[in-house]
Length: 346
Ligand SMILES: [Zn+2]
Image 1: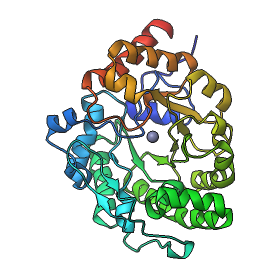
Image 2 (image 1 turned 180 degrees about the horizontal axis):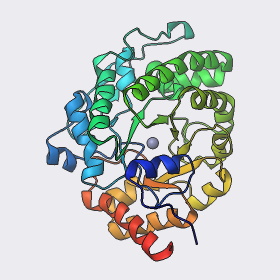
Image 3 (image 1 turned 90 degrees about the vertical axis):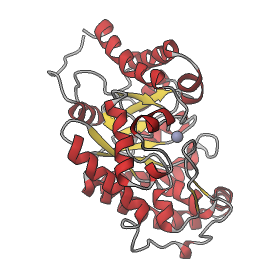
């Protein structure tokens, strides 16, 4: 038996859950992209323009609320907006693909190369995001939580140094790596603050120290203290996003003071809740490549129930969803949450 506050709107519900306070029902949250080709067609806001024009970015993002029934709107579909402003070469792609950084043309090789350009937050590709957040804040800001995104220093390292050179440096020269991370973190903070100023209620902070590339010990050595600093310097709830199997670093993640951890379905809801306890909220963890992309609504429902049964505080896809995901599968997530509360949570 649980005590519920009277009914809340989407924004109140999300912010309460991020602060681990009581909610009227579990919020539907997408800390990363829920854009699909079907949604792009529906509102005539296709990639790549929806990553570069604020009106289209806002219009496509709003479908997460208006069409899918999530409690959040998240306009930052890509992970490369600030990297474009830093000078990385971007492959903007077409409607059916995300933009990517051309990794074979890294822009930096040493700590001394790292500089925060004066136009970091006024460059067209970063301003697109802050302008989209302003539009969404004005249109939906009273009722829906608007979530921004600023990339962490580890991810920026991949983009600016190249994945392989950056990982090799982390093996060969921890001191140099730490110096690089320390300089790059200012980019994360500055861009995060610009989005907060534009009206973001919360920020996703992806930092791709992923299960398949680095260990839990690495996370502790290189990132835990930086993430504590992020949580202190960015004055809104921060949702850390790391893909893959991460139970070996969840203890450290729980110590960061961030509001939530966006976790992957490679970790079961039960084992993850047991590690983090009440120290950080969990958000996730509906599987993308199998469940949302290729299975049907019944399997989506089973996964939603598994998360709710374990006490996961916010439910949504584990990561940016494949662009070909069906709307029907996505709409099953809110349906399942409502049905679960009606059946088991009186
Ligand atoms: Zn991810």
